[in-house]
Length: 108
Length: 124
Image (cartoon, rainbow over all chains, first blue to last red; front, side, top):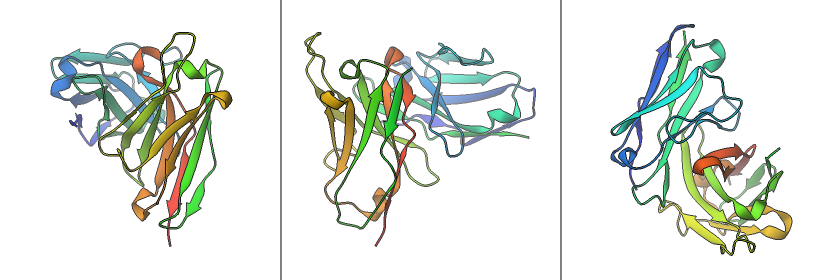
């Protein structure tokens, strides 16, 4: 297996921009996905195929990719964005799924 | 509307067996992979494996893939006749205490719809 590396925590003030990164060699060939999980709730898909937003996800959530790192950007952070964010991808063969360790976003 | 509804919380003793379920609705159940994800108390998400129930119209056979970390520890199965996927243990351990989520692998291979989670508590 391989690891997707995320920073454990990110803190921003309301209205600012939060950037959460996820790194792995396999990200040069495999798509990344982002999920948000609030306490006591199931994860929700935010971004798929590095940059695409499912219907119903606000435009202030965006994804980008550069080399071995993908980034989830949350513009105009709101208090309700305080949650755990997970990246997910597959190994280089595309067979096995992996989740990053998660990043806790704190809104100050 | 795509929905995945999981079976209720379970409290078991070490060594007991267990089978939890995940019923899909609002989509063609046999045509999509369904994954299982573990979340231990206070920890992150761990992919356990997924199953493709199999679609006779497209002639794709049923298939199951396991994470190396869970291979041999659990069994994933599905019953297309009732649109339900299952996760089972033959002998539970205290370390199996966790919330278990099922999720559909839908749009662009993303887990685009999730069940509400099943809390499994294993304690003597």
